[in-house]
Length: 172
Image 1 (tube, helix red, strand yellow):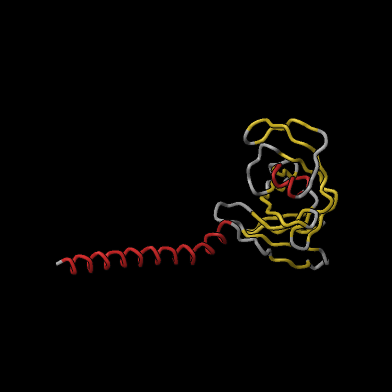
Image 2 (cartoon, one colour):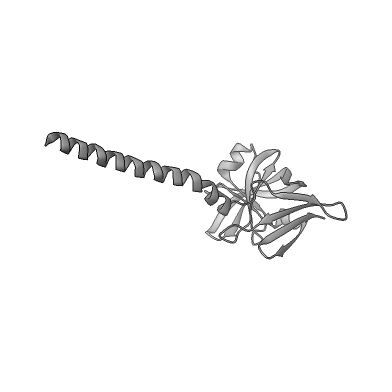
């Protein structure tokens, strides 16, 4: 009888291990699908317009936002496009990684209330094949995000139009 009990226990252990293994495989397999739903623009579609101007086509993510990988001063970053933000807004922990220094402090109103930010200038900002130089930005110590808000100090320097769930950025 003890042999049957130990065989039943082993069988139950193997069933549990099989379920855990199956769940781990599902998470591993579908994590890429979930990542693409949140961030469909890891490698944005780039081209040249008929006038020879750089163009980047972005796909809307599942939440309806445009998230895109780009660079600041040739260092990789992730941008969240925000037409409601006056300037490019960089969380302090990312600014430190990018070795950006802030100058003049100022108070700004954000979606999370009033906070103090520090002015900086980005030598180069790029999204795909679009390059912007000397872009006004601020370092925001109260932002905890791992994304940089790409505000109007950069977006006003490109043409952009939305068609369906795509946003087309074109150099001016």
